[in-house]
Image 1: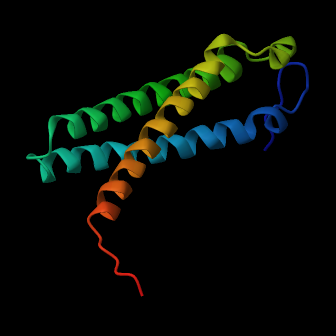
Image 2: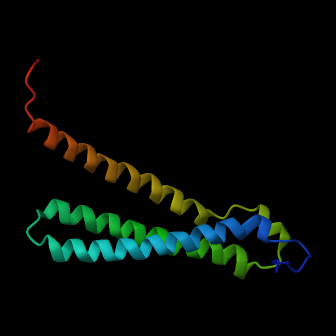
Length: 127
């Protein structure tokens, strides 16, 4: 069954992949909720900066998920049937992009720091 809009246009071609991507994103968001919960239960003695990093990343991922749902709502529900709206990029659509560009380097910087800490403790002898 195809999603035919009010003007007889198949919206599945435009927003089917976006909707599927948001559904997949929400499944992974559920996984991140579980991981965050398990982290705070399993590592209560971790330092405050690590706990703060986990909280900030979780907060940003939460905002990302909410805004992604709002974007899909905007196109598929609020302006359903408005064919001119398909070509418009709403400002709320840029928020997930910005959040992704914040979370990515933040987490990767932490990984680089951890690798550096682990690598500095390994002593390799010259052959």
